[in-house]
Image (tube, rainbow, N blue to C red; front, side, top):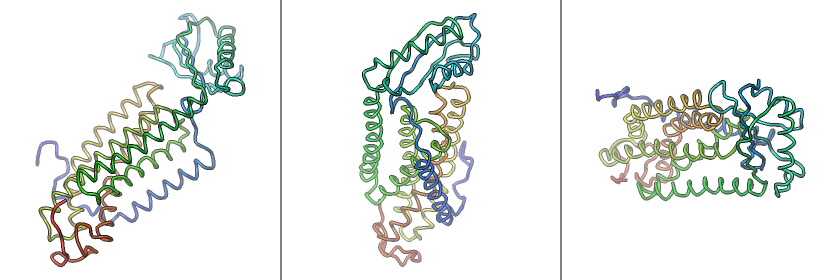
Length: 327
């Protein structure tokens, strides 16, 4: 057994035989996420809807924590998200809230007034602090960022189509794109259900998931292409199953290593990076799952339906189908 190979190449798990139940599970998760989003809405962060970030550092003698800051902010009329910077005894906090009413007009004047109001409440009810920074995102800027994020995902999907068609052939591209869309849809749905706000951190995670999922799929597709060239008389479903089994060890090792890294980031990285790490945890798991149970079965379906690589390929016995070697 090669070094670090935890699963032998000659395993014979029937992955494609379970494709129907796996596809049904995926469809159910996507529908649940979509229904939840329609019923309860998609929580948006201030990056996409506009708002204010206020970073402050309280003096060492001041007794303060996240709960106290939220309490004072709430009493002053702010639905604020509070994140501590640094160690557990740090007195530096990031306060984020969405602007409403006049402060959401886009000129920033109402927002400045609201910041002063919040700071006065902190000084009078908590204690002295130093303002580190204030950042305001107007609603128009938020809309632009949201549109740019959607465009980035769409352009990435288009680039995947072109890359896969160039790297392999056009018949491989649909499976890769559907797998990526599947991963993003399920990840987004689970994040909505979990109540995670969508902001630039989640957008960054989505783009990272897109690339990670594609990499997993390409590894399997590359082995499928090699086996198509080597075994032109072999049953297509059996060949795809063999290809998935042959890459299983690498897939598991890569995914497990990445998953452990993002778990560590989630546990130790602090509140600021936690939404990104949480999204990545979901995406790594779903991306690995889709490479095996979504991308490969879709390639099988296209070959059986249209026979691009194997004429008459609807489950024909080995040696009876007209097959063309190559990718």
